[in-house]
Image (cartoon, rainbow, N blue to C red; front, side, top):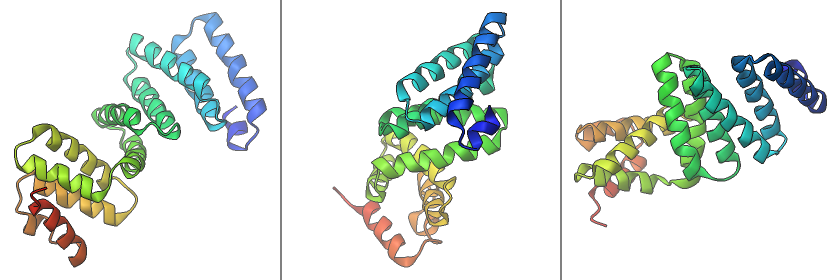
Length: 205
């Protein structure tokens, strides 16, 4: 079924996934049920069948928690986050993706971490501008711990983004959050970008 899906034979792949799911449910193999639910949910998400995909992701997540499968939990959280992103619900996607990322980090699954970081970068790009992020960093520097925690996570996602310029911004602002003087923390950025960020950090708005 996986091979059929990658070749675009969605109808046949879906039929085989559903057939496999029934077999694993009948024999009571909860781990294989969850694995198959993940594959079927991914396929349904790709086909735009979002409601059923969400039902399968949530069912698989519950099963993975019940059988103490930490990687499964992380995979289903990532799936739910990706689905929320595709449904234009970035605020819903963020906490799911952050939790998935931390779980993959704890498991040492860095290839999965990279995948989550790319999704996080998409989310942040949809709901945040650079000026918004700089404002959060400025608030953190003035003692707003919640803003600091959120800004740190966003910068971490930017560091994992495929765009080197965004990664440099993430690293520079994380150093500012770590109390490195802005002139030093942002020294590696282009002059115009560094000046823009410095002005935002100095703003009283």
